[in-house]
Image (cartoon, rainbow, N blue to C red; front, side, top):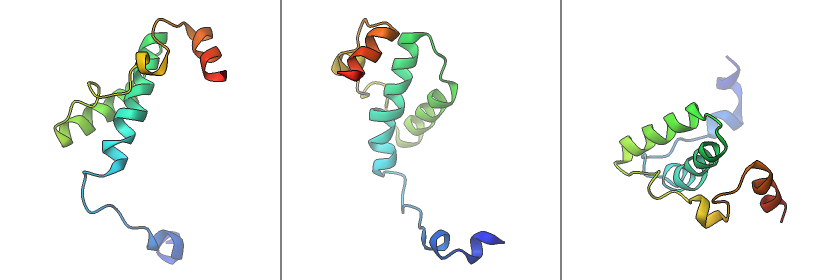
Length: 89
């Protein structure tokens, strides 16, 4: 098996617990925010939504409630063209 022979892959270690920045920061400020953008644009994000729901349940935190919202990003009320324009600065 290739993974057993790869020094790089065998050196990788999983976090010791679930309360890591990959969940406590990346979920509310990354995934949940992308889900909100998808909602605003009418784009379904079922995988993102499932991951946010799962992380919220495991860590007993409502990551959607603490997500960086569209207001904070200056995107509230924007359509797709407005969001692109805002992203371009």
